[in-house]
Length: 305
Image (cartoon, rainbow, N blue to C red; front, side):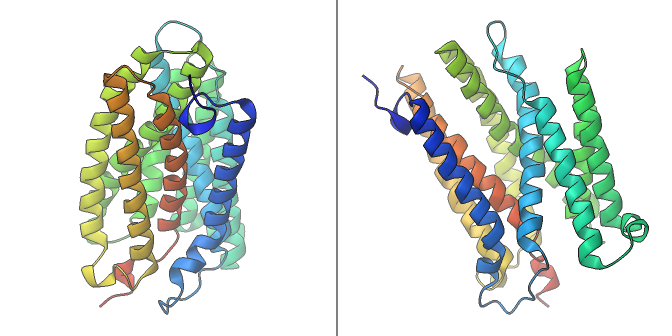
């Protein structure tokens, strides 16, 4: 006998309530997180920080859903598959990237041609066009072609996140690997759970995903550690918004790791591994919004001597 909700097979009402709670928490964290993290730090308030975080969250979510669907379809093999979400995901990311471009124009007070000529404006324009092309590829007879424009979007986002002049290639490379790994973890797990729900089972699919997830986890741990050591001075961990948000992300990462281990343990023992996996994907959604917050708050190297 299985319990309803996150500890067993959820009813539609339970699933809808849980989804609403997660969505509400994500939106609240996106809109209020920057202000809470900056409290008492003396850092200048960031214009439209909440809106920027929410739009970046939508970009990252659209990327993860699309990348995860491409990977998940390869893992799923033959059998029923859930309705494709790659086209709406890419269009969502396109709209969010365009929204960030318009927000840049509004906040800077510059005319659109001037704002689009800025480094960040150019990169946002590249990102929006890349996602639009990915949507066209996903709607075609060869959806795997979307890999190329999605790769362009990942590189553009990584370049935007590392404007430093010292070692930009290293920072960009680390972010490319980290962002790709995070998208694979979140997006593929979401697709696998949707497929298992449709097929009313599919332990073999979860086993195949677990093998891939182990490699992704290792890549995330390494790139995350190196990036943190490069960007966060030890004395800025508790005194900057970036350091505080990073601590929250590390706590969530630890929680997700425990959930992944619990799912793997149940899977190896023949138990129900879907229950912790469903909670895992919900926590990963919160990790994504926390990651979006990190892209908005100031780099601690700019604030410390």
